[in-house]
Image (cartoon, rainbow, N blue to C red; front, side, top):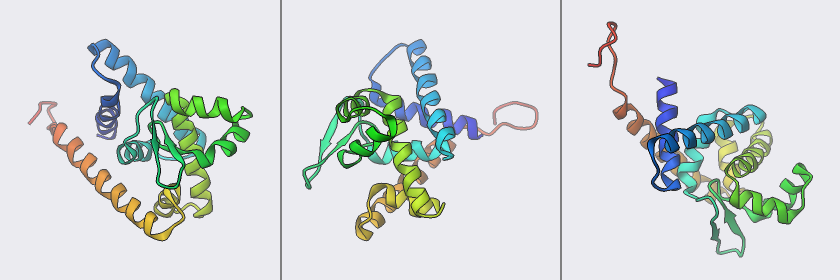
Length: 175
């Protein structure tokens, strides 16, 4: 069940990549899954969390979103530019290379977001819910608003996944 739900969520993530043939979709799905799994393993974070964050953030590869405070959010995980210097130091790369990688390379964007989330989870002493809030903001109101979105998206994704997965009886036939 978990595997099927993850595959369904990956399909949602791929929706931003545009139309493609089935083989291309399968290859993209495997690529996206590999990036998410690598980041999840590297930072000890359940991979499903990334699927929810990607759904909440709604960013797209190669794009940035302007914020009211003058910063921009980069790519699928919407990594804020305030993190570019720190991620660059972590990656031992220049800020310019880091910005471009976060904007234009899916795996780099996921890795950058995962690293930020790991910092937030460590700050929250492992509390996943608090860490997810801190991933977005340290402002209590912004954090609460974000967590409401996380919950709503998680519930919506779960409901859609369950609707797509037909129960299978003990004999292996779909009910």
